[in-house]
Length: 355
Ligand code: FES
Ligand SMILES: [Fe+2]
Image 1 (cartoon, rainbow, N blue to C red):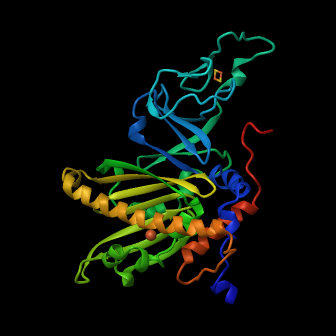
Image 2 (spheres, rainbow, N blue to C red):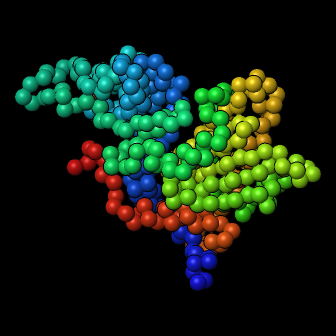
């Protein structure tokens, strides 16, 4: 009984161990969908976005027929990245020795190589990656056997239907921050509201604790926070849904705005947060109000990142081996840690080129 009410945390060593990080890359990040672009970045044929998902270089683009395609951003000659950043191109030309691929990934030119018995260009196309979109967001998945995107999102699809679709909103801002915290330190924190009164004093005043429900969802592997906002007199002012989706995506739905945060692991104990903000078109025109809403959101993220970096330093110091979680007060963190354990215990994912 005690063990169920207060399960142990993951071992501290898992938050700093390069071998664990390698296993997480293969068993978690390569097997889940990752948000890589907004669909308007890929509106025209040839438009592309090059991204890195837990160290895996990925390329998504709009092909000549108007379809979305994804590839490993790895030249089949000697492994150079083909493209960087985002932009538009007619062909995919490797900057190292000039091998050129079509937007369908087929090898078109390999200077100095002659097709023949000992070299078949058809065997050297770019390695494909699955791509799919939902609500104007483009996701990639390295695992052929993973469920499709909608199944992966699970109950999030129904929650999102209560809020304006992104197509009806204006994309306003991208913010990128790097931090000295493991992606799991940040996710442990993102999955619970137990810290709210201590770490987020202003946000805590704006959220009604009696009208907040935190629920781990098995269908979609996410933690949902159904929140009601209140004014200084305690009157309800609006409603929102915060979601922490395993392994590294935060979604914040409300009528007044939508924002998300991609939690990108850079290595054990290091992460990058990429934050995107949308406002309804009318609200987006009021730059002052948008700036103020962005500043509040950034302040909350800074509060989270600061405590996560402090925790990370102690996880690395070696005194703390493991702790306990309250299944009642931190159900989302217990759920997240269970998913990490299950993934790492499962069979490792084999990359398509590793035979
Ligand atoms: S590595 Fe791409 S052309 Fe050589
Ligand atoms: Fe927080």
